[in-house]
Length: 476
Ligand SMILES: *Cc1c(COP(=O)(O)O)cnc(C)c1O
Image (cartoon, rainbow, N blue to C red; front, side):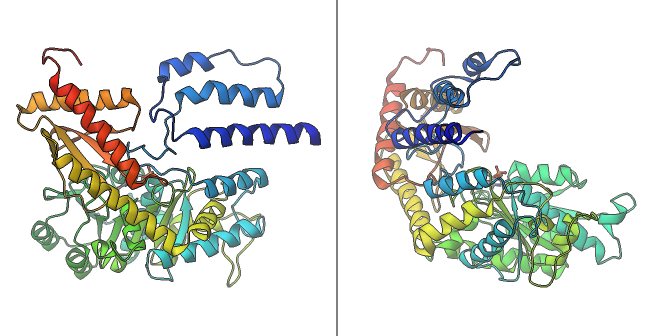
């Protein structure tokens, strides 16, 4: 591409990005167009001839924006979704422009080295054993997969079975112990690993989704042979933490590998105000967490953290004659993840940590938790709204129509969600919890402040008042 065209293309894209990001706070927080609309907008036969690059970027920006959700906006409370911090976005632009294949350190010394440094920073911030290995993966789903692959290999190796070479056929059976309210993607990871999403021992949980210690102790008592225990830091609906201090020793007594899914909850460790909630988590054997949730890295980014580096590397080994060996002190990014070729995720992670610093990250996590508590207080004082969980972190479950029959409250809750999504002041979605329809709010978007929390809570209360007053036979 000639230098002038390159200049115009990249500046054009930057211009659209900057305009989008600087107006996202004021626009509607939900998408204006549906998938079907968007499909129509983009639908066309394969282009036979090419077109001008800069014009195409204008077109992409114009056509896509109405179908974007304001996930980077300050009043987006849907799902558990980070907000692509601008510093991470800037580092990510460079990452794309540099186009580094981050398989090994010889091919890309800079990307491999920055990843090694960022890995150390993550262990320090999350206060996990500093000798752990860290794989930079696409998200917590794959981080769970990587950690559980290491676990599978390690527990079988103790019995002399080399699962990486011999596979699972004929292997000693592994008991997998998991809480009843584990995240659905952990079951996916088990499914990918041949451990089966149903071939598990599910342990009862309490009202907040925490594993009941007595039930766990009883279940552990019945275990003999290789065992993997999966605990959770930050339940997706309630934000609750398992009781690591009591559960992990029970598991270790039986020689089990303890894995923790801490996609967002592990970041409670980054602030003195919340770290007690994840006390003793550092005694586990592996941890999965996300960069693209609480740390606000651009998509996609997650971290697979493993205490036993050898088990981690054995599970992820890729060997080929053209891949250079590593010497003492060197680190190949591909040794810790399933992929060989991939994006240099370390740059954005490094940039955000360097920009915010330990104190900035702690302040952000604390602020989000404070906003969640404030919002919960406001909802508790509004007639007909029930806050279903203990708001101890950033997650909140609301039910509308407290004094109505359960199916009526389900409908009123759905109507309030639909109404709030139409209003566009903030975005919140639905979920089911303990058989009931709920509105789920997640305070985790980088720029969300106390003021945003108030605006959003006011809008949700206002939507609820309208729903409450409408005739009851109206269709959804
Ligand atoms: C989001 C989440 C996951 C899955 O993470 P992805 O980044 O979407 O792959 C797993 N566990 C929990 C608790 C989560 O919140």
